Image (cartoon, rainbow, N blue to C red; front, side, top):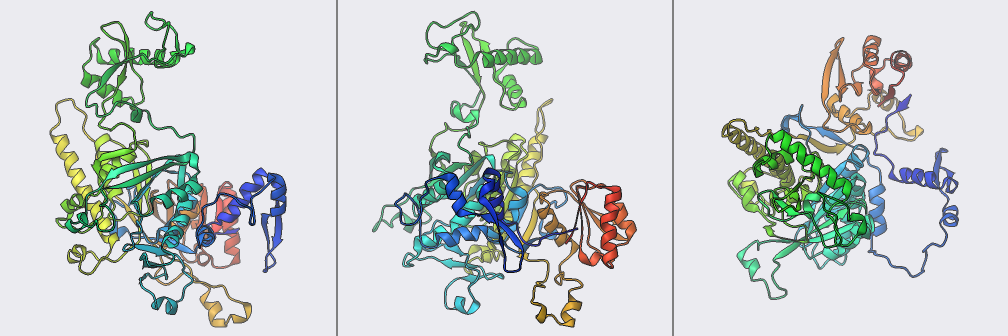
Length: 636
């Protein structure tokens, strides 16, 4: 029976297996110091397979900085950490599909990767701009406390640091690059095949960031550098022009996961059209294949706007609309409602009074798709101040900026922000769901950075940024629910009521492993140590902590329903509709194991201390063979 690993998965091992699928002959085995065999790549064999390579001192184009190799290795390094549930800080723990993760975002990305790889439709981040005054992450966890005490910055419980990065630092740009690189490497793995990455950035590191993203995502996936407007943070800032001009703009970089990504249709249509409109179904291009008969007309020059198949389908859709409306002359409002109910992807085509074919453009408040979003003021401290009655956070982004990004994705998209700050992204997700009836979900990740002792946040009782972010989601959620309910009370007779969106979130906090480190050389073991290893769970850790860890290992989303069952006096967890069953009690009787097996789960997990002896372990495996042979059985 397999033992469930405590550490995150090895990305290097995964890459070796991918290469083995393409070129089986380049994979070999090496013996480790402990005598075990490990699959790895024969570099010489790989060179023969791919031909001429760039190596050594050979001239080639490359983007690098001091510390790049270590930054890349940091992304691949495994960690033995866990996510601990905090229902008491959550909202609607049992029913929500949203997550708020508190801790270092590099750890969070590693922990999320196994379960969420390829599932995130959109990532938005607003990382440190490297102004010399903001803080960046120092990922050198190996540094000792004594070494650290001589430097500036804040320690967290695990030895990670937030450090100032003044321009006088000789590694000013390198440190920032080394912070961003591993996080973006892991972020790419989380994106779905049609996923998008948006990154806010000032001109301090915009060119460097483009180079990093181009290396990770590829130049063909660079979609645009969008300009957004920002206001001066203070009166003094408006006149700081001695060394440089004032900064009225910043940028949002847009990258796609794949080069064949195509923008949604609505972004290619006319801008700022409050009502639906009909446009002439004709264009000046000159493709003979697009000259077919439509409404008795066959062009002799130019072409129809759509293919014949699409046009015929659009005509049929319009006939269905007339039938559903019960009239040959539906109003704009009736057409708009029908169009939206069909999912905004239903083409319509009719013959105008002048006898010319026309196609329908649905109503939209979106601007024309381009690289200038200067109609938006990116900063919005007043927006969050309205929720808190004080300026608890000075650099919050505008929710409308993020809702505009989210319209690039489906209404059920999973949105990730791993520099979540005041949780503007979570607010935007809930707001847009309330407006269009969507079912988007969010994952927020934020390090609990301490607020300045003299700040409005501390005066209001918030010690760190996570406290602000979680409270903002709570307050924004209550406000959105009140607005939806008020709107529904004022509905006209027969109008469809708005759906109350998911305003909940599960709080999970990154912590050290749930288990004690029992690794030691044989000579180092004592009788007292061996007695203590009968249960290697750390003091204070609970079954609730363990079930979250197992969910991650079994690629079950952390928002999945978790049910606690009482089976003959033992607590049995049933996760995601019995997809996973687990029991972490001591000395679990055979009757309970049998009841678990009869649930026929995909996975069944217990821990070492659940068994009275080796016979009980064997019984566990045999019981599942008899009642549910398809179940994957493991011990943690």
